[in-house]
Image 1: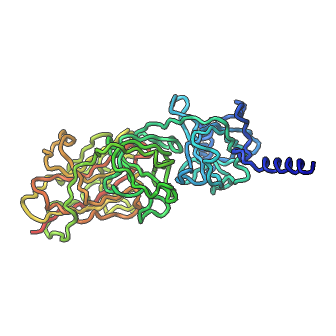
Image 2 (image 1 turned 135 degrees about the vertical axis):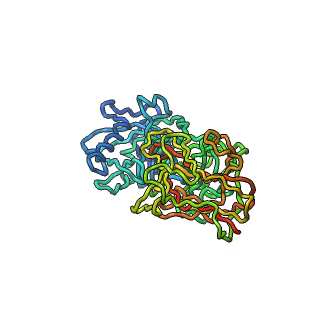
Image 3 (image 1 turned 120 degrees about the vertical axis):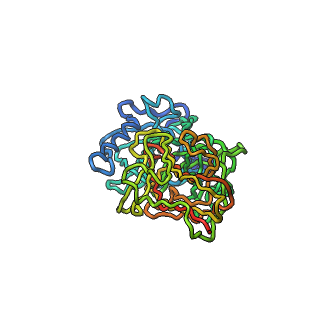
Length: 476
């Protein structure tokens, strides 16, 4: 009899120690699912509006009162299984992008002081978030749910997160929003995005996702769209299990969370795993390039020089042989002068698409024709700066067949002067950067050099680029 009692007690002990996979989360069994009364559910839109109203009232956060028995319903779109997300959940309100006008697809980030969240809240898992006592604010530039009563958000802690993020039994297929970079807005942050016809920038071919010497906490790899040329950084944690893989060198599509980098400087895409990038087309869309390298000697004679001092502030650049062409939009290259923290060099040229209201702004500033056969040792040099490029970009192009007329600018053959350094989105917005002494002596004929800006009036692509001290010299 004693032996039977002992066996029963041992069986009870073993049974009590079995991990049922639910970690004590108050969810129903497989036969039934949890339901939240409709009068206790609020939309993601309402949540976003609460934060916007708090900001309009001069507050940095919006606190949901403990007495408000409210929930949001959403789907998990992030996964820390591969190590590219840490102590956070990204959820969005919809499984797809249907009815975007009546019910906008929105997302939010939850800061939770727990690792391996994907073991409980896997990709596609439907959850309810209990909002009582939570704080809405911005962390790393994106809308976040957390704890805290001041501007410094605090993580939801391990002892409470299971009661706040309530897992249901439903796991759904999540369809990413197929988007073009130029049409993404702040409302797309914290949501799952698919970008098509993308490739790694040619200057970063052969790099890993996040194990290069410059990768301290995250690796940033510049991706570009083959249709528009607009670029975005792919962000990969140096703790991701795919960090050492070579970024695929073809072109194709990728899926990830649209978000901001840690210091909230620029937009990035963060993937859940290496399987989310499918650059399977071997033919790339790289532009024509001219690369004579950098010259070691600056010529003593000048063929063309512009410091913009004779231009008029806030007026389009003109004279001195310049062609100032607005391909799309209502903005062009203008002169400006500033003594602020992002000071001009006396008077400089600037392209600014912010507040233009245009869906696209493309502007060209093209030098007069330069005969490269009349002398030797030609070089180009200039300086650039930006005021938070916000994914807009500037290129330095050349053409040997443009006839000098505006109507034929876009039909001419333009290539990249790839040796020239142009300020990047990741560069500080205060300094001016030298282009280097760009060698032009390896080509012949008549050349035009263009400074081309691409952006829009939309907040994520409305950056500012500045240009000054353009000089073409030669060795007599």
